Amino acid sequence: MHSLGIPYEVVTDGQRSFVVVPAQFIEKARYEIWQYEQENQAPQTSAPRITAVLQNGVPGVVVYLAIIVLVALLAGEGAFGRNWVSAGRVDGSLIRQGEWWRAITALTLHSGLSHIVGNAGFGALFGIMAGRVLGSGVTWLTVVVASGIANLVNTLLLDSSHRAIGASTAVFAALGLVAGFVWRGKLMKQDRWPYRVGPIVGGLALLAYTGTGDANTDVGAHLSGFACGFLAGILLTRVYHYVPNENVQRTAGILAVSLVVIAWLFALRIWA
Image (cartoon, rainbow, N blue to C red; front, top):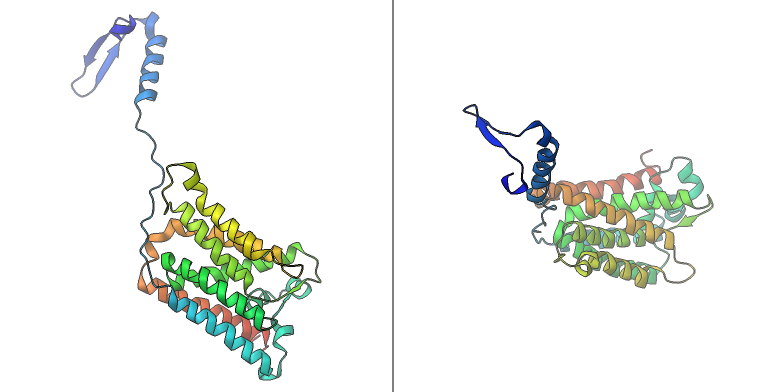
């Protein structure tokens, strides 16, 4: 106050201290104190970076591959006397009528060897990447839920005649999951803007390179899968302290498989 030419006196009541100034200087003194507080307040700290506990992503990928191969074999044999493709594919009209399970069962169906090999390869790659930072159980439960939602969203945005099968929506949900979690969790050095946007750019580049394909490619499903996976990755950074727990991983893995099994029970009218 002295350096600003404001006369003042400090008084105390034994517990608190007060700065007393003449009435004509009150407004100026208040402004100078406010400005001092603004300049010297503690800097706001951003959310801390997550220290990821690297885990084994192989078990989840093994189960993923086993499921799509098993479904391919059962569908090829027409098990339970049903046409698995017509019973489990994405069908815009039937989904609108309430057959939600098709959004999940369609993820396990494929049109041929090249289709299943492609989704198996990329699914294993992105699944391993996600499983390393999020664990097999949490990764694949998140992928099943995110890709199921993505299939529903994509279907409702398209004409009711839309039909689709394939695990590619789940594949790109896994890719989006990695990108969202790495970006929001700040697993890469992000003091400079190229590092901050690196995970997002990398994920979008892989999506563009592997997810656009030819005229038969369901680009909308790939984009919605990536978007839902990305949002799920961001959400998981909020609860990551639970993720490395073995019981959480085991429970999540059981739920992931259970969702697929329950969806097929509905689809085949075994349980409906």
